[in-house]
Length: 340
Image (cartoon, rainbow, N blue to C red; front, side, top):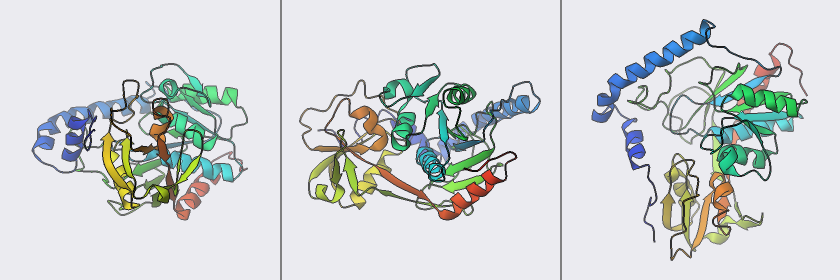
């Protein structure tokens, strides 16, 4: 039987993320390298501003949802919340993404039967959860153009990640933070920052339960009251209480998922923490693991091919009303913007 955190080949990564919370010995040793990283990042920005690297625009508004810290900050739930909000307003929304971790390298549309290994787990989840057209490509501008060619009625594009992908012109930037905030405030690899903070952006959203700094908008997050099987059947979460469960997560912070399950009164006989975007191709169900297996909604799109009996527990993520009001105001202020 696997032990707490078994299968997690990212132990070094976890140690580094812990170091990023403080300016301790490891962070200080890496600080000179962060100066090199910062200089290269600044040079790249200068090349874009000088026009030596090209910024390209599409004919509809582009909303970029991203973060300035490494290690995941809850961007995908924000993307889905933004897409659903705009859809509720009657808008036709498309999504573009790099499709991090996929085994392909082309530009393609995410379809209902797409293999998550070919399109990425997060794009597959976004399409499944929202029904919005989703395209993936190494260059998001290529994905955006392909999306508009295939779906010309699209009124707005949401980019999943891409604050640092300057080749795609954007109209609104949403920067997402979790409870870590900016960590120790240093740049990679001495700290978690991909770029300096504060930086200019349109909206700041805290995706965690305890915002690490003042300013910006907040959100509530909780596990759904029902788990979902691979056949679409819903199982009340309360019905799992008292049963020994094995929880699996291949996300940036697996322990956060495990703690949310425990907070709902569920008994975790064991946990399996795997690296973020784990492909599950090499994963084998441990022998003797006969307890009910529960996982995140993102992992389910891949795990169900290996363990069809696993139950996915969706995350219900709800940005505050003032966040959506500010987003609507930003959209309405754009030149040439036509509301639905």
